Length: 374
Image (cartoon, rainbow, N blue to C red; front, side):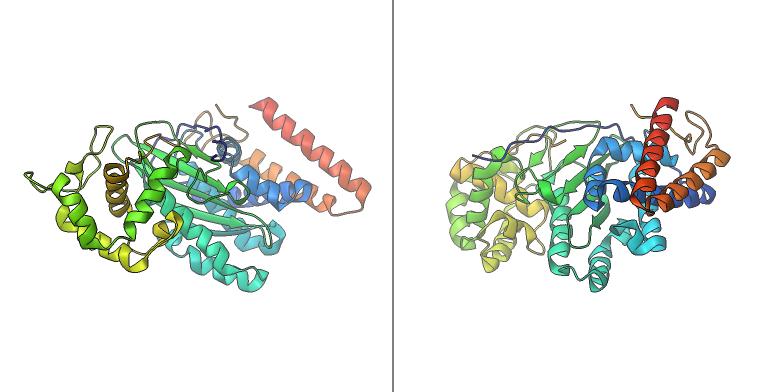
C-alpha cells in the first residue's frame, strides 16, 4: 500500500514582467521579517515553515507584502524578502533562508553548509534534501516547466521547507512546488506538500504513488550490463525504423520511437557503473537527468509491463495594494505604520506573560482588520 495521495492545491501564476521597486522591496523585507517573527513568536518556527509550504497562505503573504496577486513574481519576491530579513535579523527570525533565483539557487548548498557551521545542524542531510527536491522537480516530474528558482528554509535543529518554481514559456505560466519535511515519507513517492499551477496537462510523473512498479523496474534496468539490455530490447525496438531525437511529444503516451539508440548505451554505462539499488539513488546520480529517466521509464514499460504515471501533480486578499497599482497603488504611509505596529507587537510579546498574551491578542485583531479590509 502506498501513502495516501494528498489533495492538490492550485493557484493561477501567469508569467509577469517587472520588479518590485527599491522603495517597496525595502518595506517588503521589513514587513515580511516582522510577520515571520510574529508567527514564530506565536506558534514556533515549524508553524512558519508549514504555512510557507501552503500555496494559498504563501500567496496571501505575498499580497500582504504588496506584490501582484496573480504574478509568478510573487514567489521570487516573497522568498527574496524573507532572505533579506534573515540577513538583517539573523537568529531573531527563527529560520534560516538559503537559495533564490538563477545563480543564487546554485549557491544553496554552500549557503546551507555555511549556516550549519553556526547552527550545528548536519549540513549533509539538509544539502541532500535541497539537491534531491530540485532533482525531483526538474527530472522526475517532467511537466514542461523548467526550474529557475529554489529556496531552502529550515529551522535550526528542526524541519525544513522548499519553495521552488519553474516556468513554461509556451503557455506563459509558472508552476510552484512546495515541500515540507514532515510530509516527505519518501523523496520519490508523492513527496510534495503542494504543486501550485494554473494549467494541468499530461506529464511524465515518476514520483506518483501509482508508478511504484515503473520506478522499481527502471532501477533494475539501470543495473543491467548495457550490451545485455540492448540485445534484449534491440530486436523488438530498433529494427527497421529511423533514429529519432528523444523529446516529449504532444501525444499522451511515449513509444519506442522516442528512444534514440545511439545515446542509450551511454546512459546505460553511466547507471551500470553506479549499480543503484533504489530509485532515489538512481535519481541522485550525477548526470542522470530527464532524458535518462525517460529512456529507462519507457524501457521498463516495454520489458516489465510496468506502466508509468502520466498524472499531472499539480482569490486573495490585499492589505497594502500592488506594485503595479492593482487593485490599487501601495499606500506607503499605511505600510510604514503597519511595520511600526508589528515591531511594537514583537517587542511587547517578549515581555512578561500577561502583556505577551495581550500583545498577541492585539496582533490577532490587527490581522482580522486586514482580512476585513480586503
